[in-house]
Image (tube, rainbow over all chains, first blue to last red; front, top):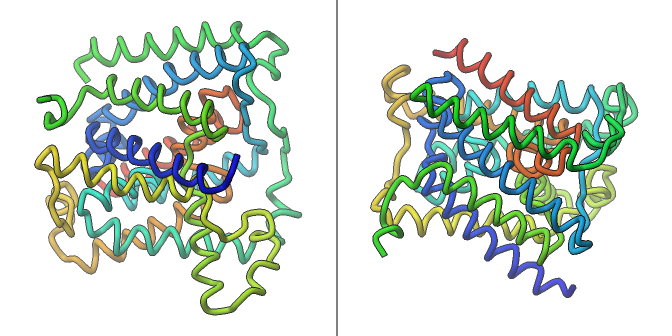
Length: 179
Length: 168
């Protein structure tokens, strides 16, 4: 596909994504911190419904041969250590790399002046350290782009059905608990 | 057309909308929704302004070239989409200090910006270390059932919950 069409599509999909995030309230610091303090479950509700809907659709399309999925490769050291560092930043800033784009569109200047500067600095720092990290710690516990069905050696739907049920049940329980 | 100006929408409707959106990005563009790599590309573009083309020779930027791509435009679009929604919802405002922050830590702008920069550094560094963020791993990766994404998403929240508890 030609580059220009890709870029236009990216922009249009981004407008919808940002619109949805803002309508969901998750471009707000207060909502994200409320989630991390386990007081306001908006973020989890948005994420789990997105994963539930998306998971079924993309796997149906995969089965029909319409799309090719691209699960990311990883390792225990990458995903656990990186994930925890990310989490600490998530709580300090109160936005993530996606919702910060929405927060900037919402007019939130701590996101623009502080958060964006920090993310660019942190990304640049990682790029500088990358050669040493790549050949060292990031390889520890490598498991590649394995998926849960691959890991358990079962068909996709043997995972999708129980995971989907679990996500749905979690949402029902949250609602039932008045959260 | 009241729904266009209504705010907030049900989180389930928003989530389902993001789910359907990810069907469409896979189908039409061949990409999952993701954001954080674009910040790394932008960091490279800025570094290029100062240090010239040799930046492209760095091992990291050989893998992640500092150029505008599909995802970069997605992130740009997100700023516009959120702006549009905020305007329609009557929720747009210039705001330095979030209310919850102000209630806990006061209204000093410099403190909030300093902590935001520090948080941003950890987010930028951590998302590259983990290979994705709340969108790329947390939504797109988990729906593809990638082990790397389920592990990362759990750790995002473990790290986030622990840090938020220390702060508040």
